[in-house]
Image (tube, rainbow, N blue to C red; front, side):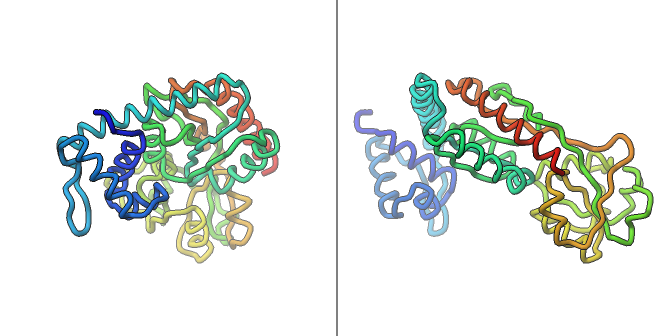
Amino acid sequence: MIGITIKHLRYFDALARHGHFGRAAGACAITQPALSLQIKELEALLNAPLVERTSRQIRITSFGEEFLSRARQILSDVDELEELARSAEGSIKGPLRLGVIPTVAPYLLPAIIREFTDRFPDLDLQPRESLTRSLVEDLQHSRLDVVIAALPISEPALHEFFLFDEEFVLVRSPQDAAKPVPSPEKLQEMKLLLLEEGHCFRDQALSFCKFRPTDRSYLMEGNSLSTLVQMVSAGLGLTLVPQMALPLETSHAAVSVSRFPKASPKRSIGMVWRKTNPLNNQLMELGELVRKIGQRHKRNL
C-alpha cells in the first residue's frame, strides 16, 4: 500500500499497547488529535477499520490484530537495520534502551549510569524500570535493546548473559536478631511480607519458603522492597530482600538482618537481548562492564 509510513505503524503500535488515544499520544510525544488523525489516515489507506472506538477505550478489530502482528515485525526489522548500521561503526554510541526490573534498578542502575557515562560519552542511555513480563515483551518487539533481570528468561529468541549470583537475606525486627534463623518450613508459619504478584522476586521467595499457590499465611503484599522493609520496622512481620538492597533499604529502618546458615536462597542476575540484534558484540562488552559493576557492588556490602 503506497502511502503507509513507518510513523503510521509506530503510532498504531503505541495505540494497541496503551489501549487509549491519550496515553498513546503521550508515549509518542504528540497531541491526541494528531494521533487520531494519523490512525484515521492509516485506516483510509487500508480501506478497513483498525480499531473500534468507544467513549472510554478502544478495541482492536480482527483485521487490526492481523495488521498489528505484521506491522510489529516490520518495525522490528527496521530497528534491526538501524542497529546493523550502528554495529558497523564498531564503537558504542547512540541510543540504548535499557530495561531493568524494580528489585535491581534502585541499587545497581545509578552505578551503571555513572560508568556508562564516563566510558561511552556518545552513548545515549535510556533506562526504564518495569516488571519482567513487560520488559521481555518490549524486548521481543524491539521497544527495548537489552534488559537486566533475573535468569532464566527461557525464551528461544533471546540471548542470556550471566552477570552474578545474589543471596537473599532475612529482614526482621531488632527484637528477633538473636533468635535462630527460621527454616523455610518455619517461615510458612510466620507473617511473611511479599511483593505483589508480577514480581519475579516474589516467586523466588515463595519457592524458597516452599509455599503452595493456595497458601495465604503471608500478611501483606507491597509494590516495593522499601515498603516491605518499613512495614517490618513497624513490627508487622518479616521479609526477604536481595543482598544488593541492604545499604539503601535498611539504613533508616529499625530492623535486623540475618543470613541463612546453609542452602541460602539466591537468584541469578543477567542481561538479555535478542539473538538477532546486530549489536551483539557491543552488548557483550557492556555486559562484561555491568558484571564488574555488580561484583564491585557485592564486595562493598
